[in-house]
Amino acid sequence: MTAIKVSRPRVMGVVNVTPDSFSDGGRFLDARAALAQAKQLIADGADILDIGGESTRPGATPVSEADELTRVIPLIAAIRAHSDVAISIDTMKPAVARAAMAAGATLWNDVAALRFAPDAPEVAAALGCEVVLMHMLGEPGTMQDAPAYDDVVAQVEAFLLARAQVALAAGVARERIWLDPGIGFGKTPGHNLALIAALPRFVALGYPVLLGASRKRFIAALDPRGAEANDRLGGSIAAHLAGAAAGVAAVRVHDVRETVQALAVWAAVRAVAVERGG
Ligand code: HH2
Image (cartoon, rainbow, N blue to C red; front, side, top):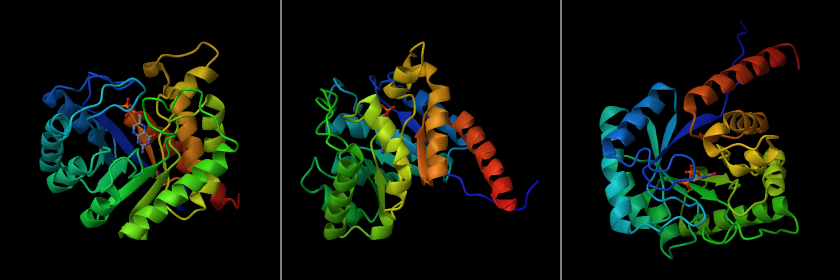
């Protein structure tokens, strides 16, 4: 075995406490089932757990702040009591982010990139947490209505840099800002492929990049047989390995065990290639 170590992206495991998420909706709505799923993902090798209480798929029912808090906060507290795994909260609501940090989370994953609540940038700064700024075209309800761009890569890049500026101006420390091109959030399969192909350009912006391609619909569009959401593991791994090669900091996945294994093989091959001067 080689002595050289190649770093691989961290693996963020998804725990959705929702009735309607596109691939695992309803499975972990029960608090005990959600905690059991979280423990399983930790055992499978997750570096971070991403806890979500509101689906963002088009047509999903909006969730009240009170319901979202009830879904996610006891779970975060229970995970924290069980393990010191890093925890992120997938929410667009500042009050939910604040309560999540108090319960033990350290990362705010905001698919709205701090756009949907006027005080979101200030709350992120005051919390002192890491924050993921993700690109979405418009809003969840309408984002998939014929999404169009002149140049998807340039426009997503400009959006992310502008949102990073807003966060910086509000007082979020530069080293706490992550960027995410938002695979599937107002994109055709072609847009998603262009963004995955452009990951080296996003990584070169100097912020950690998060890639979330797990079980997304563009994979079905590329599968000659088509594929239901729970039948997209191969395509998910392929997309995340492309992210690894581009140098992303983390991948957000439903299938932690298989992704950890794929990344271990990828990193081992890279290490041998580096050792041999490749
Ligand atoms: N994708 C989903 C949700 N949150 N966050 C980031 N940063 N990046 C992503 O790509 C991303 C995300 C959608 O996946 P899922 O949580 O499985 O579905 P739903 O939104 O329906 O709960």
